[in-house]
Length: 198
Image (cartoon, rainbow, N blue to C red; front, side, top):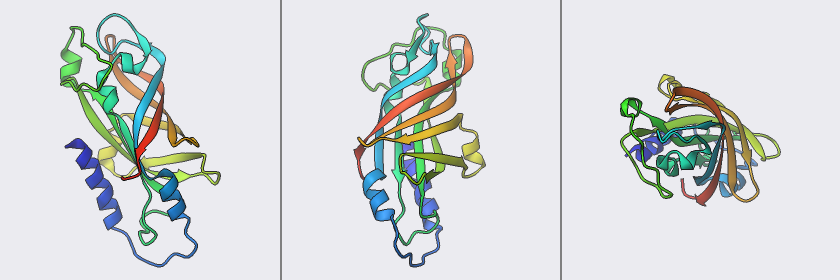
């Protein structure tokens, strides 16, 4: 249900747009090259963290939290007639697991798996930003949240890099709930496109 929520949110953004003709648009190229959904294939923290209460800290977040496998990015490039976004902008949506109140109270070991396994200790938070492609299309920036609701989401995006192999590398400062409480850490995550449909 949460995945449908962010899709609806982006749809609302595109509905509220002016429609005028745009000559020489590069949106078809951007749509072909970047539009779609991207699955998380690696996520590494700059600090070793113990997210699952087993007393062993790791920088590999997949080893600490099976809910990480549900994290994904959606990049949406608007149609030429949709002018809510400027020519070189895109809608960026990320699902990211965040420790909830139950996680903060739970002191026992949380079993981790090498496959996607949901658990009641994390909520998938939806972060939505307006992105801006750099001229070389190898990197981009993400603007502030689109409204007050999104400002509550715990992510400060430092960089976005687009790879030639349909990957996106995100560097973000995030808050993680660990055995020692909340910590702030810089995380590098690599996503790969698995569908062009957004």
